[in-house]
Picture 1 (cartoon, one colour):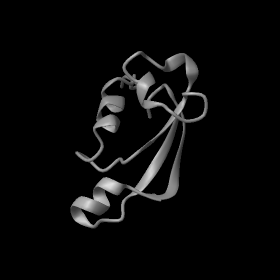
Picture 2 (tube, helix red, strand yellow):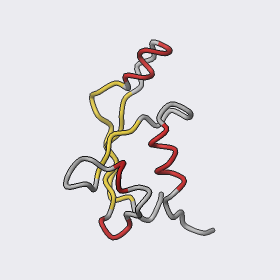
Picture 3 (tube, helix red, strand yellow):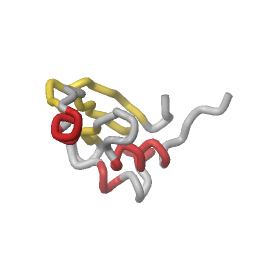
Length: 78
């Protein structure tokens, strides 16, 4: 898990893009970040909970905001 992630919650909401494109019922996730780990590229994507959380479709290739988020997080080194 990325260092900045505080919590992840599966919502009872379906991704509107997945429903429209493929008729797939893919649930959205609410990802809450630690305030100290939010960089300038990630900040505009977090519009919930005082700009620390956002709703994302985690299906690969669906949500461009999720892709930006994942590219800009710090992942633990092995």
